[in-house]
Length: 149
Image 1 (spheres, helix red, strand yellow):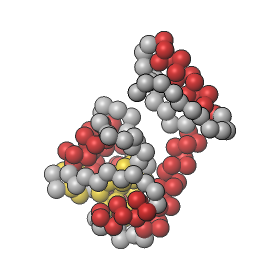
Image 2 (image 1 turned 90 degrees about the horizontal axis):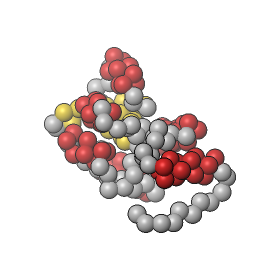
Image 3 (image 1 turned 135 degrees about the vertical axis):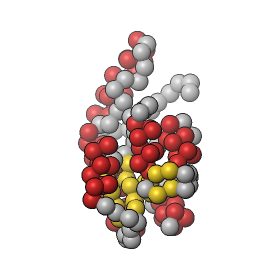
Image 4 (image 1 turned 90 degrees about the vertical axis):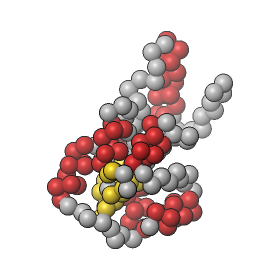
Protein backbone atom coordinates (compact mmCIF):
# COMPACT_ATOMS: atom_id res chain seq x y z
CA UNK A 1 0.00 0.00 0.00
CA UNK A 2 2.86 2.37 0.79
CA UNK A 3 4.16 2.27 -2.77
CA UNK A 4 0.70 3.13 -4.14
CA UNK A 5 0.35 6.04 -1.74
CA UNK A 6 3.76 7.40 -2.70
CA UNK A 7 2.93 7.18 -6.42
CA UNK A 8 -0.42 8.91 -6.02
CA UNK A 9 0.91 11.69 -3.80
CA UNK A 10 3.76 12.33 -6.24
CA UNK A 11 1.24 12.47 -9.11
CA UNK A 12 -0.59 15.12 -7.06
CA UNK A 13 2.65 17.12 -6.91
CA UNK A 14 3.86 16.22 -3.43
CA UNK A 15 7.49 15.60 -2.53
CA UNK A 16 7.34 12.34 -0.59
CA UNK A 17 9.84 10.75 1.76
CA UNK A 18 8.82 7.17 2.45
CA UNK A 19 10.32 5.34 5.40
CA UNK A 20 9.22 1.96 6.69
CA UNK A 21 10.65 1.96 10.21
CA UNK A 22 9.87 3.92 13.35
CA UNK A 23 13.49 4.94 13.96
CA UNK A 24 13.87 6.32 10.45
CA UNK A 25 10.50 8.06 10.68
CA UNK A 26 11.51 9.93 13.83
CA UNK A 27 14.75 11.07 12.25
CA UNK A 28 13.04 12.04 8.95
CA UNK A 29 10.69 14.33 10.88
CA UNK A 30 13.21 15.77 13.36
CA UNK A 31 15.96 16.42 10.78
CA UNK A 32 14.29 16.47 7.38
CA UNK A 33 16.06 17.07 4.07
CA UNK A 34 13.01 19.07 2.98
CA UNK A 35 10.30 20.74 5.08
CA UNK A 36 7.68 18.29 6.35
CA UNK A 37 4.16 19.63 5.75
CA UNK A 38 2.35 16.52 6.96
CA UNK A 39 2.97 12.94 8.03
CA UNK A 40 0.88 10.01 6.82
CA UNK A 41 1.75 7.23 9.21
CA UNK A 42 0.63 3.65 9.67
CA UNK A 43 0.10 2.53 13.25
CA UNK A 44 1.84 -0.85 12.88
CA UNK A 45 5.51 -0.63 11.93
CA UNK A 46 8.18 -3.36 12.02
CA UNK A 47 10.10 -1.78 14.92
CA UNK A 48 7.37 0.09 16.83
CA UNK A 49 4.22 2.09 16.22
CA UNK A 50 3.21 5.33 14.61
CA UNK A 51 2.02 6.38 18.03
CA UNK A 52 5.63 6.01 19.24
CA UNK A 53 6.78 8.31 16.42
CA UNK A 54 4.29 11.02 17.39
CA UNK A 55 5.28 10.78 21.06
CA UNK A 56 9.01 10.93 20.29
CA UNK A 57 8.70 13.85 17.91
CA UNK A 58 6.28 15.83 20.09
CA UNK A 59 8.77 15.57 22.95
CA UNK A 60 11.36 17.63 21.09
CA UNK A 61 9.66 19.75 18.38
CA UNK A 62 6.24 20.97 17.35
CA UNK A 63 5.20 18.07 15.12
CA UNK A 64 3.72 18.56 11.68
CA UNK A 65 0.13 17.40 11.20
CA UNK A 66 -0.14 13.61 11.56
CA UNK A 67 -2.73 11.60 9.65
CA UNK A 68 -2.72 8.03 10.95
CA UNK A 69 -3.88 5.03 8.94
CA UNK A 70 -4.48 1.57 10.33
CA UNK A 71 -5.97 -1.79 9.49
CA UNK A 72 -6.93 -2.52 13.11
CA UNK A 73 -8.91 0.59 13.98
CA UNK A 74 -10.09 0.91 17.56
CA UNK A 75 -12.07 3.83 18.97
CA UNK A 76 -9.88 3.99 22.08
CA UNK A 77 -6.75 4.18 19.97
CA UNK A 78 -8.20 6.92 17.75
CA UNK A 79 -9.21 8.99 20.78
CA UNK A 80 -5.79 8.52 22.38
CA UNK A 81 -4.00 9.59 19.19
CA UNK A 82 -6.18 12.65 18.68
CA UNK A 83 -5.62 13.70 22.30
CA UNK A 84 -1.86 13.24 21.78
CA UNK A 85 -1.90 15.67 18.86
CA UNK A 86 -2.78 13.63 15.78
CA UNK A 87 -4.75 15.57 13.20
CA UNK A 88 -6.76 12.73 11.70
CA UNK A 89 -7.25 8.96 11.76
CA UNK A 90 -8.31 6.76 8.86
CA UNK A 91 -9.03 3.02 8.86
CA UNK A 92 -8.11 0.66 6.02
CA UNK A 93 -9.37 -0.06 3.50
CA UNK A 94 -10.00 3.45 2.21
CA UNK A 95 -10.25 5.15 -1.16
CA UNK A 96 -7.22 7.21 -2.17
CA UNK A 97 -9.59 10.09 -2.86
CA UNK A 98 -10.64 9.99 0.80
CA UNK A 99 -7.01 10.22 1.91
CA UNK A 100 -6.43 13.17 -0.45
CA UNK A 101 -9.54 14.93 0.89
CA UNK A 102 -8.31 14.46 4.46
CA UNK A 103 -4.84 15.77 3.59
CA UNK A 104 -6.39 18.80 1.89
CA UNK A 105 -8.40 19.43 5.04
CA UNK A 106 -5.24 19.12 7.17
CA UNK A 107 -3.44 21.71 5.04
CA UNK A 108 -6.33 24.18 4.92
CA UNK A 109 -6.85 24.08 8.69
CA UNK A 110 -3.12 24.58 9.29
CA UNK A 111 -3.12 27.59 6.94
CA UNK A 112 -6.11 29.13 8.72
CA UNK A 113 -4.40 28.78 12.10
CA UNK A 114 -1.13 30.24 10.76
CA UNK A 115 0.80 27.35 12.28
CA UNK A 116 4.19 28.91 12.82
CA UNK A 117 6.58 27.96 15.59
CA UNK A 118 6.33 30.20 18.65
CA UNK A 119 9.74 31.68 17.98
CA UNK A 120 12.27 31.21 15.21
CA UNK A 121 15.28 32.27 17.27
CA UNK A 122 16.60 34.30 20.16
CA UNK A 123 18.60 37.04 18.44
CA UNK A 124 17.21 40.48 17.64
CA UNK A 125 17.64 39.74 13.95
CA UNK A 126 15.70 36.46 14.27
CA UNK A 127 12.82 38.26 16.05
CA UNK A 128 12.77 40.93 13.35
CA UNK A 129 12.68 38.18 10.71
CA UNK A 130 9.83 36.50 12.56
CA UNK A 131 7.82 39.75 12.38
CA UNK A 132 8.44 39.96 8.66
CA UNK A 133 7.31 36.36 8.23
CA UNK A 134 4.02 37.09 10.02
CA UNK A 135 3.48 40.18 7.83
CA UNK A 136 4.22 38.21 4.66
CA UNK A 137 1.86 35.42 5.71
CA UNK A 138 -0.96 37.95 6.18
CA UNK A 139 -0.35 39.57 2.79
CA UNK A 140 -2.12 38.42 -0.33
CA UNK A 141 0.68 38.33 -2.89
CA UNK A 142 4.05 36.90 -3.78
CA UNK A 143 7.01 37.13 -1.45
CA UNK A 144 10.67 37.19 -2.49
CA UNK A 145 13.16 35.88 0.06
CA UNK A 146 16.81 36.77 -0.58
CA UNK A 147 19.97 36.09 1.36
CA UNK A 148 22.28 33.34 2.41
CA UNK A 149 21.04 29.94 3.47
